[in-house]
Amino acid sequence: MNKRVRKAVFPVAGLGTRSLPATKAIPKEMLTVVDKPLIQYGVEEALEAGIEDIIFVTGRGKSSLEDHFDHAYELEDTLEAKGKKAELEAVRQVLLEPGRVSYVRQQRPLGLGHAVWCARAFVGDEPFAVLLPDDLMLGQPGALKQMMQVYDKVGGNIVAVEDVPRELTNRYGILDVVSDDGKLARAKGLVEKPAPDVAPSTLSIIGRYILQPEVFTELAKHERGAGGEIQLTDAMAKTIDRVAFHGFRFDGRRFDCGNKLGFIEANIAYALARDDLRDGMNRILKQFA
Ligand code: G1P
Image (cartoon, rainbow, N blue to C red; front, side, top):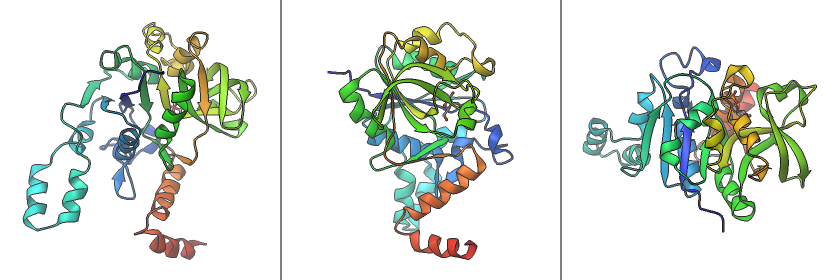
């Protein structure tokens, strides 16, 4: 029986430079797709997957993230007094259970691996999930829940993956695949952002991970990798002899919301997925066809 995954880490300290100027004064995780900030989709996906405790690895200028998951008394009072029930429900729906959400600061931008390492005391000696909120996953059930079902069978480390065009391997962590049944691929190595001509495959890590705590031993070494940063991919690669590693193609679609077109596409796809907006969205799309 694999140890249950109860905790999730959300690295949210990034500056969001790819989304400027939108992210000059607001965190990129607070950009909205239809009517919810990106971070809310990630948190809802985690809760759906059975996650009980959440930690945000934040940085300067990210306090609106904390406010988003807290009570907003004035707003709630006003909505209540005006009898705006649906709006009140929407505001309260995002409240996290008291004491089950924590925040730690990544004081310097030393990379994704360093951000995850900042959560080590919170995670302790048990498996945990990592969700990168700018990778938005549209799926039923959500990507992390699908990964949990696979984790129950194979254990070890599991990441969500998708096939990318070879010219894009230098944007992703790439798997060195030993076997692949089209859904689940077993890897014997990993490389962070390899050039297309040396990439061991085109199977790329997208922002969902189930990790064993062994990864912290490697992260603690603070070794620099691609881009001079402490990379999560490198730390996972170093435990691959001890901890089985699988890439899982989830059923659904991933949108890279750190990319402007990806973000616009996500807005359209999420509007089309909603009963209350589908017809209106289709009408708008026809005007541009
Ligand atoms: C990070 C990871 C990379 C992964 C990607 C998915 O890169 O380092 O391995 O493929 O997220 O979005 P970043 O996008 O932060 O450069």
